[in-house]
Image (cartoon, rainbow, N blue to C red; front, side, top):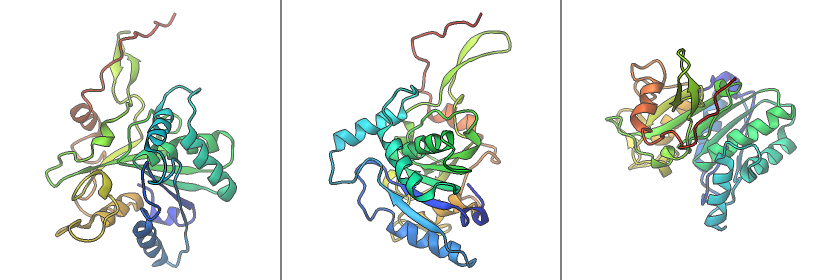
Amino acid sequence: MIDKTVVAEWDIYLLAGIGSTRSFFHDCKHELRNRLATDGLEPCIRDLFPYGDQTQSMVRQIMEVHGDMSRFRSAARNGGKSAAQQIRERSAGRPVLLVGHSGGGVAAYQAACILHDDGVIPDFHVIQLGSPKVPIRNDLRNRVSFYTAVDKARNYRDPITRLGSWGGWSRSKLGVWYWDRAKYQPGEVGTIPLIGGHPHYFRHRAPFVHDEFGSNLSLTLNAILGEAAMGSVMTEQDNYTRDNYVQDNYAQDSAPSIQPIPEG
């Protein structure tokens, strides 16, 4: 999450995943603008479709997301490059908040890396909602937040967040190599209690309204803006930590068969 007073002074981009309609962020943009406008602020909010929309080839879009998820620098990263170019043209020299849903969260991170490394933007924060896991650079991890949907019992409801990996090889104090599932995870990992699952983060009408917490959209924006109602967002402050989250929900993220080359 990021403080609302900070968000209002940044350019905001909402990045859609594959197969999204052009109206996907309509309600989100409207509600986000209303929340910030209550403080007399006029945020600049734009939506981007780095992989295209529902009218374009799903096979191509899936392949491009897969390329953006790669940990190899030589990967194509078409979605990240597309988003970076559009942001470069509109927001050079300004801090940006990139909110990505599904594959859009992958493109958001890759775009932020490109713009940061090129010195185009002075600051940024990426919020990934229901996104596949992509390895986060250690120097940027505190600028990335990751949220996934859970039900009221905190059972995980978004299978897309099981894709990808944050894992990497580490060496213990005794010099033993081990596979660390959380080595490249974002600086903040949390959950949002939604009705439904992966497609429903931005729904705000029945049946996607909690009696206690409000609509899915309201809870999602609470997470983005740091206005979490009690029980609405799980973060590091809970007894259930990020490491528990990784261990309990990504046990299949096992070590690859290729062993690391020992140093020295």
